[in-house]
Length: 390
Image (tube, rainbow, N blue to C red; front, side, top):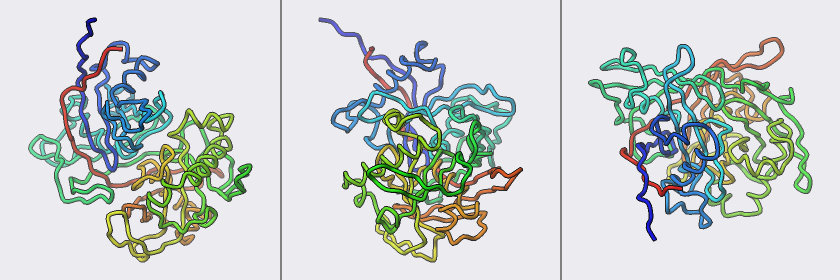
């Protein structure tokens, strides 16, 4: 019996924020994978090593966590006044699907650098030294992201002294601006309320803030779940009962937000909505062993991604946190003390993160004009990924 040699596809493995993913140029993909559909999904699943019944993604580029099971496809821009199109896929670890329903805020920080080095940005817009301002069209959610990428001697500057909690080593700082981050086809608060009562059969009734900003997110209070907001991954991810409870709440929240019609649909849409719980400031020790003092932060936030407590904070959920904190009387704002906040610093399992947000009431509807945060990114490996022919 003879077997075909593996195919080779140009790719770059990058860290962006507290995530890692495999980056592709659209035209480098096989012809059948250049269009959305089953062929593309099958190829990307095989690249990452999914579905893996062992949950380890040993035979692929994935790292067996939601933060490391990701793909990005960039292409020439189709929108006026933008530099590049950015498409994100969250790859399931143990199931055969790729979730295209939302953005990854962490990997957004790597998009500008990859676009520059891949020749997708007009050379006239890139300074030899200083800051390249890259206008990114996020095609999953039809939104603009502006990335400020440091340049030195004509090259993207990746090394630096900026320390991002959740990432061991320092790197160059990248400022990200998420422009008008509310969902384009939905109200920021889909029920029209800042706080709702969510009835979850056989689990309980919960006060929630459900918001479409950055990524659809359901916020609860830590207290309602029996937590204090200082929990680390081991406290949640080893508790199967707790994970099932939180996933059930997420499913009912997704139905209430109009994201899907039935709770069973949540099984095929793991990326959105996110679920997070908040609490007032309290001192704790982060997962790195560093102390986080109550006086350093405005509130505590813990968020789940793909059914597990995240080791730090998803970038898109940070957008939701910053936006909700800026709007009086949301659960996030109340946990932060109920003040009018244009910037909020919150504690997460790995440390702290500061997010700035501009939100205002327009014709009776809350709108966010911009959310800003700093991340870092760098290339880990570049060349080709290899995979068997289907």
